[in-house]
Length: 633
Image (cartoon, rainbow, N blue to C red; front, side, top):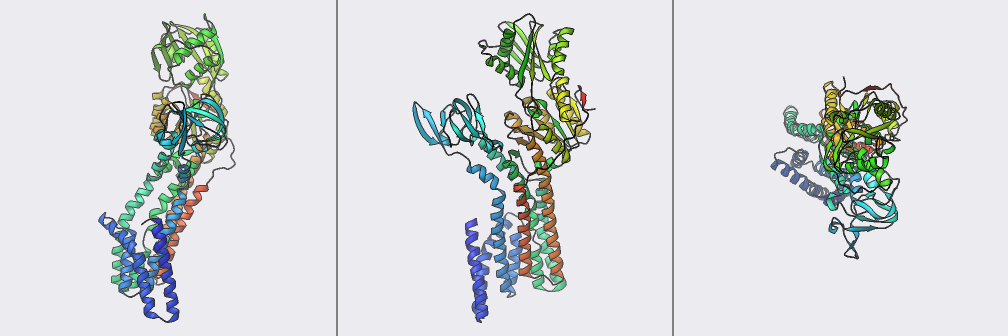
């Protein structure tokens, strides 16, 4: 039965009850009884049908208990109770549907933002078509006030774009040539033409909706436990009711016991909180992949961060080029041609710098090999080139003279990452790259600590000097530098063996194994790679660490909300049953209180939709320990 049918039957049932009251005061006893029986049958039929369907699925439902009680009430001639119970049950179900819809309002708001049409320039003609008909490679035109219908880079124009649908960030972002734009975002003002790279269900926006839908359907451990408990609890109540009857011989008390003991509020106590909590996260740009993740996140006591792209902006810039025996521009060109094949932040930074200086990158590197965590090897114009850290130079047998080492250390102590470049087995230069700490990082980490995180650690493949500088500025408890991806995994595994509940936050491909190893994996969504987003349990869509702090506080609030709901549900049933056994609670009044407890649970969960974690926090700066070894000791 859908919501409209429930509304219709509940309304007619209410009118029949009012009619019965009028007939009662008018003295038409038989007509009153007939009206009450009609109201009972009308409202009771959908309840009985649902109970029968559950029995066919070998499940004991709440509707079964109500149906037994109503049949019993009709059998003993208690028509007022039977009509009141069926009406109240349907009315409670109606309110439950309405309020549950509210808990899913965040998802509905997202779906409502989905674009429906696109203006496409195809074969020289501008045509308007359904979003589903846009093909990869189409040139799409978006004007002021229109939604971006596909994912892709800007090829003409510039615009101020509201990306709240993707990132939760309502401040418009300035976008111009080559910048990526996403489906579901809104052009505040400006004009852009984009080439469709992802269309339909493959767009980032479609994936977000899919992830939120899956997350809201995914059941938490508490939810699964309560469902198993209800499957045992419900038939047990039938048996207990029989025992009550055998001891009291009071059929009305037995039926009341049967109805009051329904675990309705208990069954929904966990899912309604989880749905509201996940919806809140989605509204704030945090994708939490299910109730189980929400519960696990609330238990985290240790957070491990990658540095580049996580604690820092991940948009580093070249600050200096130092060369030996080769022109700086030539060194940059050769290195950039090799790094064209790399997805690493540092490699992309070198390529950007070359383009910024209008250096033509004409030659394609041969035999390129990405050395994860160390750098890249490639043959450029017949010259064997290696670009990476010290470990790569050692692995390649490239000697580093004391002068070069002194220069590299000096740059690293100043907060730069020194990229060593060797050509034909000799150091040819060092490119210094620096990345800025995210402006919200210190406050976000302070909030995490304030909310219960006991230690925060950095695991990075970057050099020890840069890692130390970032660690000191953010007050991290420990820093492990110059690690390979597998060493990050070992570090996370050791922390877990020590009994810590570990969350790992990262963004690059090399972070994916550590993210998968941690109890909870977080990926930076905006700058993060697809593999990180797929591996992670939580995705921060705006690349903001304060979203992580919000998610952690939200998970604790959600778990507390679930506990409150369970307490309300169990406490209400317990008190009502005592009232029934003492003869103080009757069928209709007990049903009213019972339905009220269901609503109380839902309304309590709805508070989570508007939950915010903004509280004053004090940054705590600790003395940072720096360790170049792979794993925490």
